[in-house]
Image 1: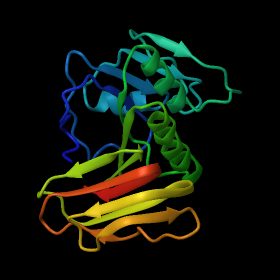
Image 2 (image 1 turned 135 degrees about the vertical axis):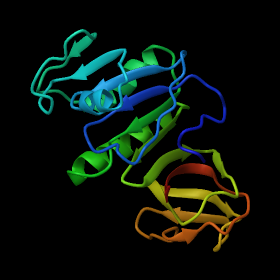
Image 3 (image 1 turned 180 degrees about the vertical axis):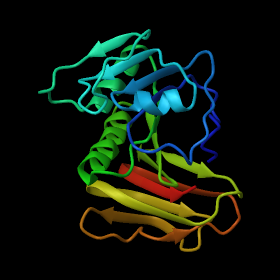
Amino acid sequence: MDKTKNEKNEPVCHIFGAMSTEDITFCVNDSDLVLAADGGYVNLRKNSIKPDYVIGDFDSLFESPYGVKIIRLPKEKNDTDTLFAVKFGMEKGYKRFFIYGGIGGRLDHTIANIQTLAFIAERDGRGFLFGEGNIVTVIRNGSIEFSTQEKGVISVFCSGSKAEGVYESGLKFPLNDATLTSDMPLGVSNEFIGVPSSVSVRNGVLIIMWSS
């Protein structure tokens, strides 16, 4: 999947986090929603993109942006700034989310962002997390397809106790109707081989990550 392309042509909620976005290119359409999660506003300014809203408690930005709409959150809260931004996007009717600058830095923040992808999948949406040369997504009872242009390593992990009916087609190491569990990394380090490929799960949730 091309990180700059929305193959379904669905409106996208773009969320910018505080980690580096230097290796990422962006394509924002008029129907899309652009949100900065706290320090992600700095990444937007670097790319000359004006957000529709800046959301956060400003613990990483340290200042209130000028000339943009702000949703100020309390410092003590249950949701991360990114999860709040996702919920805000859902309230606006968006089901497809591109999250940039959410990989790297503190490991707990990266894991929280992957869990946010699971939150989206559980509500019949699809989210993608971009950063440090990697893309991560989460699927639930569904599938994702890849073109012949994809290269490198792809890994698939179970989110939850188990995922049943897992298929990995068109990859170096195929899986056919496998069951993945959260305590056995069977799906790590597969490879694209230059043919159309796909990953699917009949019953369960999968975390899928690949290099870009």
